[in-house]
Length: 229
Image (cartoon, rainbow, N blue to C red; front, side, top):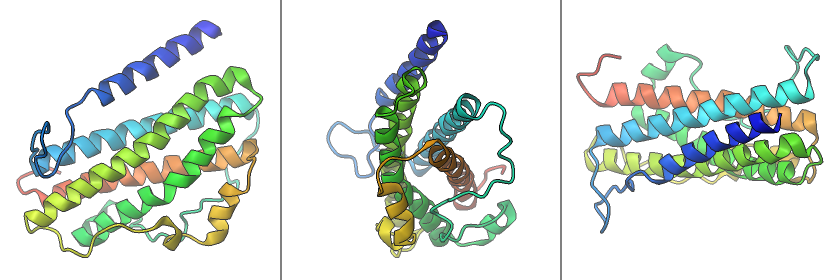
């Protein structure tokens, strides 16, 4: 069992190393940074969002198998704190909304997950299930960092779109406290979270990370001409 955990941890470490070793993403050509095209920025944030969703899906599945191996959780009510953020329900609706609105939705979702994932990592790193928590807390820390990195990347993408005149100037920083009810944030900040709380959080983040990934792909297709989407 320890060998399996070690091998899995090694894969996570290698993935982080490759991600950190990538060329810096700069929108304005600061010293030491290459100036990427808008298409390259899109490719980077889409790749990052895909990795983030993949890790969140793996962690959700592993958590479910470890803590609820024989319990059917289908149909269980979820406590997603992002329920108040209006998002397109499918690809067709997402293609109909404007670039400003879709970019804003992506940023809202990413902003809303910063604090809950940090709380999740702290709770997992202090948990009593050492065999599971040692490995899972590393993944929790990784997705928490990736949310912040992806938000920064999407902001740079939006800045590049503004410079090219394909995005209005109304898209900008949004405080997460203005996006979701205060009760939802107090739920994650109240202190110790139990296994059901963790499972709900992972379920909701897996759902929202998939939305972010899909919305970025759609935004690229509707912004850059000549793509087969």
